[in-house]
Image (tube, rainbow over all chains, first blue to last red; front, side, top):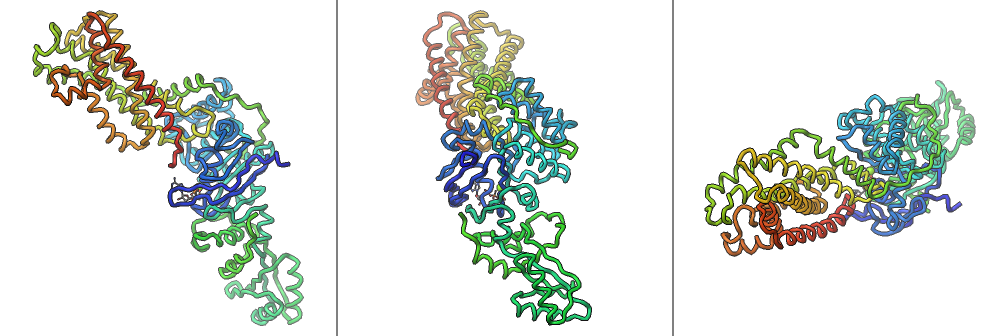
Length: 353
Length: 276
Ligand SMILES: Nc1ncnc2c1ncn2[C@@H]1O[C@H](COP(=O)(O)OP(=O)(O)OP(=O)(O)O)[C@@H](O)[C@H]1O
Ligand SMILES: [Mg+2]
C-alpha cells in the first residue's frame, strides 16, 4: 500500500527571513487521491505547493513526489507533475494554442503530437474560439483556464492546483471539477488548495487544514466534521408553547439552547440525529409540542473555523468569514456556531497525527 | 471548460520522453526570437541605432581627431567603423539583459521551472535571439558606412567578413555579461543602473574611438585590459587588411574566456528559486 503514496512529505520546513512559512508539515497523498488543502491567507498553502513542485527547496525536511526526492531529483519529479499555481504561468505574447504547443514540445511531443494535444485541451477548456489570440487579450477566467490546461499538457501523475477555481464562472468550475475527478479516477494524485469550502467538500477525498505552517487537522470531510464537533437541531414549538419553558427544560436535559426570537426558533447543539428523538421527548414531557424540527450536520465551514481558530496568529474567525467568497447557499440549514462554542472546542481539537 | 465537454476521463496515453537539450534549444530559441521581434518599432529603432552612432561619432570625434594620431593613411571612418562593429553590441547586450529580466518576471519562465528542461537553455536561447538582432545591426552599419561615407574595407571582402565574424563572437560574449547580471539581479531598475557602470567603461575606456596612446595613463591602462579594446584592435586589423597579428587571438581568447565565466555564473543564477 505504501508504494501508492505518490506525495510523501516529512517534517517540511520553509523559512523566508523571519517568516516560518512551513513549520514541520507531514503529508501523504495516494495515487488517484484528491487532497484538499485549506487554511487562512498566509497559512503556507502556496509555499507547500511550491516546495512539492520543486519550485523552491525546503529549508529542512524531506519530500518525495512520484517516487523521487524533490530536492535530489527535481528533473525526475518535473517529468511527472503538472502545476497550475496561484498566479498565471503563461506567455502573454503567445496565443493560447502556441502556449500549449510550446509546453508540449518541451515535454517531448513532436510537432504533430503537440498540435493535437493543444487542440484537445483548448476544446476541453472551452478556449477553441480564442485559440489564435494572444493570451494577453484573454479575460481573467480564460487566462485561468489556459493556465489549467498548461498544467495538464504532460499528462502528469501528480497534479498541483493552487486555488484553481478563482475567477472561473460556474460552468467552468463545474467542468473543472468533473475533469479533476476524472483524472483522479484514472490514477492522478491531486493536491488542491482552495478557499471555497464547497469545492473541498465536493472534490477532496481527504482534507488537510494548515495554519501558520502547521497541519492543524487532516482526514476525510466526514471525519473532520465529526471531530470538529456537533451538528445542531433547530426547532419550533407550537403557538401555545413557550420558548422559555422549552429552553429551560432542554437546559436541564443537557442541551444548552440558543433562542432566536426573530425566527421563533430554538437551536441546540447535537451529537447526531439520534438526539432528535431525545429532544422531542424532553419537550413533550414539559407539554411543549414541537411543530418543526430539523437536524443539520456540521458544515465544512464549521470545521474550518473550528480548526483554524487554534492557529496562533490566525485572524479571528469572524474576520475570516468576511474574507471568504460567499458560498453557494447550502441545501441544508447551516448550524449556528457561536464564538464561545468555537473556543470551547479548541480545547479538544485532536492532535495532528 | 464547459459541461458539454463530456465525461472528463483521460485515457492513459504513454508520456512523452522529455525533449533533449538540442530540441529544447530549438524550441526555446524560436520562442525568444518571437519575443525579440515581437514589436516592429523596437526592431526598427534598434537596427537604426548604430547608424546614428556612426553619424554622430564620425562627425563629433572625426572633426577633432587629429589625422596624425591615426595610423598612417587611414581615414577616421576606416578607423571608426570596425570599432563600431564591436561597440554596437554593448547596447544590444544591455537590452538582452532587460529582455531577459522581463521574461523572467513573466509567467512562462516560472512554468519552465517546473518543466523537465534545463533552465540555462532559456538563457542560451535568449543570447542567440539577441545575437541575430546584432547581426542585422552589423550589416546595416556596414551598408550605411558605405552609402554615407563611401566606406570600403581595406582588407577587402574577406577582411570585412572576418571582422564581422569576430565582432559577432565578441558581441555574444558581451551579451552573456548582461544575461548573467540579469539572471542574478532580476530587476530591471537595478540592472540598468548597474548596467551603466559596466557598459560605459566597456565602450569608452577602450581604443574604440581614439588610439590608446592618446588616452591619459590611467585610462590607457584600463583600455588595455578591456576586452573590447582587444576586440576593436582585432576587428580593425581584419578590416583594414595588412598583416593580421596576435590581436585576433587575443580578442578571441578574451571573448571566449569571458563567455565561459559568464555562462557559468548565469547558469547558477538562473537556477536560484524565484522567490528568494
Ligand atoms: N518569498 C517570500 N518571502 C517572504 N515571505 C514569504 C515569501 N513567500 C511566502 N512568504 C510568507 O510565507 C507565509 C505563507 O505564504 P503562502 O503564500 O504559502 O500562504 P498561502 O497559504 O498560500 O496564502 P493565500 O491563501 O493568501 O494564498 C506568508 O506569511 C507569506 O508572507
Ligand atoms: Mg496561496
